[in-house]
Length: 191
Image 1 (cartoon, helix red, strand yellow):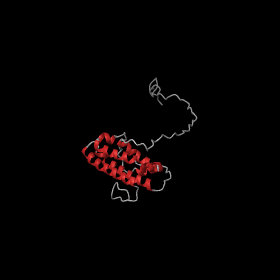
Image 2 (tube, one colour; image 1 turned 30 degrees about the vertical axis):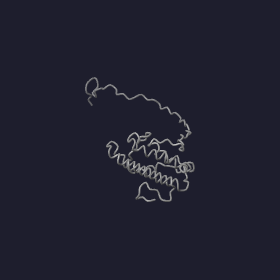
Image 3 (cartoon, helix red, strand yellow; image 1 turned 90 degrees about the horizontal axis):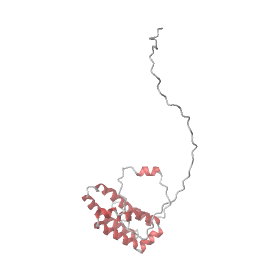
Image 4 (cartoon, one colour; image 1 turned 30 degrees about the horizontal axis):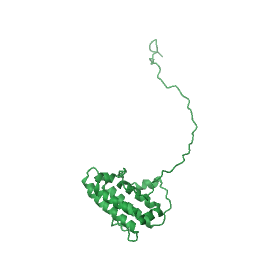
């Protein structure tokens, strides 16, 4: 992979992956131009560019590399990955389409056409990781795809552990007593 040319998969990548790189590269170029016009969204320019470029790289690795083993994400890995404060991208469905309209809709239509082709459908069936990479991009563009299966929530069994209830002996709260003079009721003590 050539790190100098963003959004360009290697020539050995399948045609569907190279077409995806071209679509996302065009989308990123349009988004940079459009984001610079919107002062309220200009902070999203670099994070969005990085996310789209990383998606192309991840899709290429998922499509051409060996089937990966499941990797557990630990808190230490997450802490190492977050060295720079992250700008959180919006996650609403079709937010790019709502924000920029027809200029972004064309790339969503191209992506939907690419995902309906037989080569991409075969890739989606063969490698589930490809679907996990494509799903967020389809979501922000508002693309409905037949081949992408929705993510089903995983049922997690939670063990209920009942801790013994320890009842502390309740003590009376301390209250100050009446203030008595040091000399007593008959006057100062001599002594």
